[in-house]
Amino acid sequence: MKNTDKGVARLISAARYSRQGLLAAYRQEAAFRQEVWLAAVLIPAAIFLGDTWLETVALAGSVVLLLIVELLNSGIEAAVDRMGDEYHELSGRAKDMGSAAVLLTLLLTAMVWAAILLN
Image 1 (cartoon, rainbow, N blue to C red):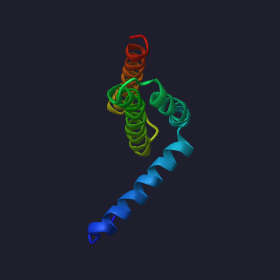
Image 2: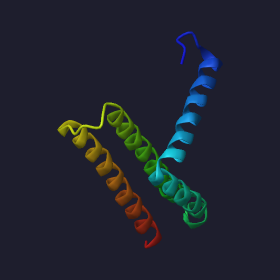
Image 3: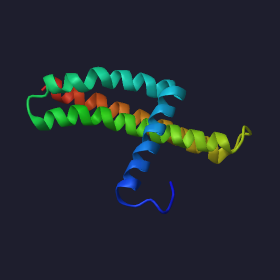
Image 4: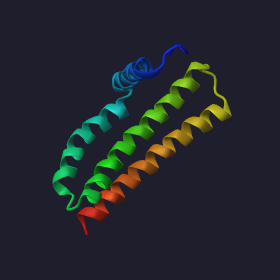
């Protein structure tokens, strides 16, 4: 993004880069594709299954949070992979921590859905 972009031009540039990131993740990351298809089912289901707006937001929001964390994890993995193929303890740790964040978010999503649907 150019430093000279201001106002609406900056927002348009930012939106374009965000779209490129989403498309890259969808094309390159199998886990992200799976989670997008899961979200395509669960987010509309949240609208019908939530008894209140708060429940609906919690159901849908937990799924969106999963997508966000997966994007961050994919970004970490891409940055680490760009540095080289050789093993480094810190690279492995960064990738493992990103993966752990996705796992915790999956568990959180499952707990939110279970708590609301089983209540």
